[in-house]
Image (cartoon, rainbow, N blue to C red; front, top):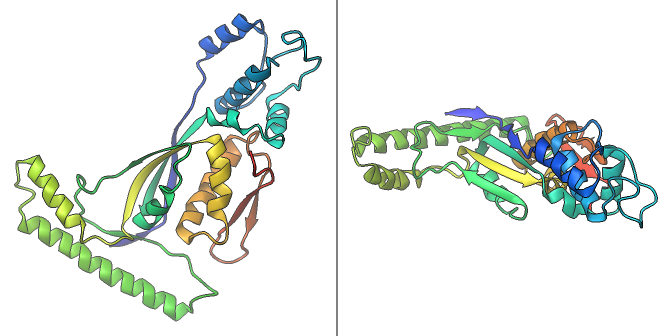
Length: 269
């Protein structure tokens, strides 16, 4: 068995079709409109926002006599005014690797604005069991208790790992030709795997959902593994989409775990 820390990968995000976007702008009479230097997903949010009011420039809507220029300025106003629906158009596609089934059971509670694809242990046969590499709980456990827990976890995982291999050999899965039978036997064997088993899960979320989930799942009251994952999700979003996460700030717990909270000023968006 092996102890591992979770990994976060961004494998995709919503992209603008530049030609079609330009055709749209020409169609509404704003062929020279320019968002400024920003990501596709931030520009997309601005386009949908401005389309609500036809505010790509003065003169398109007779009710408008001035407009806020620039993606950063515009989105700041959108977020501070709570116009969050326009942030739902852009999706970010994450892959969370080496996360436990404890983590995934909590993650799938978030269903609005997300898409989920999890590694199936009915099809994927287990050969090696991995466990979350726990950070030290300095306030709750002594160093000796932490070591005792880690050793116990290692012993249990190694026993269950050997049981997985024993059953695979006993049922002759390597020689089995019928995939349908393999699937049924693999499903039977996985029931002896622990909840703390590490796995992979694909998680896509729109920007509005990300602004809600990141501070929620890095809060000090959240479970430590999910805090660790969303610490990294927040860092990625802050770096890649600064105009949408301009009001998000990192507050460290100030201990050796490296954990902390991402706090957002405008929560109701």
